[in-house]
Image (cartoon, rainbow, N blue to C red):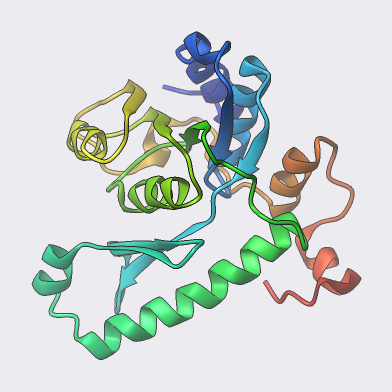
Length: 226
């Protein structure tokens, strides 16, 4: 359906051009959402930042999301999944603590010592390369509102219809190009769905070309072990 994230981003940007005259900030979900968000930001002539969230995977089934956390101590727990998977309170607390540590390291890696962009009184477009369960995007919406956003638009090239409907309940608008069924994984709708390097995310935020890769960044004094 999509050649790669750049093509998907350009197609998604076309569907968001009506926002070009608004005071918007584009927020990409790292890592895969950032190349898509970069194309949207370019088309809208809007500033680009990341919005860092972490999926909370069920113990023993890490791909099954039981919620997500975000910057600003924001959390979203899917209690239905927690109950169905018989996750104990101790297990849930342990996963949250572990993912919070990872989240804080990733945020420092992407921004250095910088703070998240000021969203007070602004509209934001939260972009990912695709939406599966919607847990991470749900947390991202909550983070954006915590940081002062007055309008939150969720945008992605592809998502299942059920996730789109759920996100409409927590956001101001959802823009998704395709809602195919059956929907098994985001990668099935891309010819090239290779993992996005950390260096590409950092370069997008800095507006330049990657010069060093993440492991080199760690060795260069960031103090972050990836």
